[in-house]
Image (cartoon, rainbow, N blue to C red):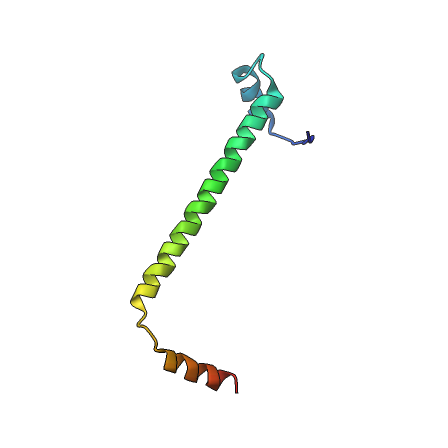
Length: 79
């Protein structure tokens, strides 16, 4: 296991101690951190999904380009 040292505001410590008195603080903090990681990953996944949906919607608005047109532009860009 790893050791993590953190500094928290005194007010938070004052609220934390009675709320979790008699419990394993390491276990509680690990659980809270694990939940935070899951929430962050879910949020990132949601952002990625939204970005993909937006890109796909933009793609639907873009008219298709023929292979001949694509090839002629490639030749123009790469002489």
